[in-house]
Amino acid sequence: MTEVITPKKPSIQMTDNALQHVLALREKQGKDLCLRVGVRQGGCSGMSYVMDFEDPSQIREDDEICDYGGFKLVCDRKSMLYVYGLVLDYSDAMIGGGFQFTNPNAAQSCGCGKSFAV
Image (cartoon, rainbow, N blue to C red; front, side, top):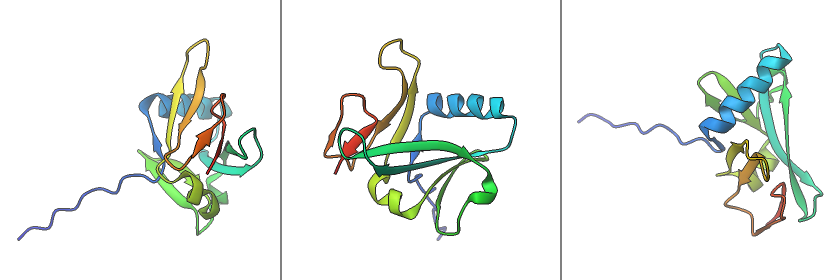
């Protein structure tokens, strides 16, 4: 009997729009960078999302790594408790555009969508 291996669904998902926008932003940096996503205390709902480019040499052994065709999205273990299953999207709408976070762990979100509570 042949074993069927189902690919692991990424812990944090990126839509095609988000990935294309991140890759364009990275290209402007002129370096091979990864994207670090996490959370910190603050924001109007209690916790806010943080995102920034980072040199791949800064990836820690206990980081969660999501690979998107060679581009790496990384998240620290503590933040992963709050963002597991997150979908990162990007919209270029004139009102409400930018990166959008859909977090299945959020009990409530603020109006801007950049902070949440669990």
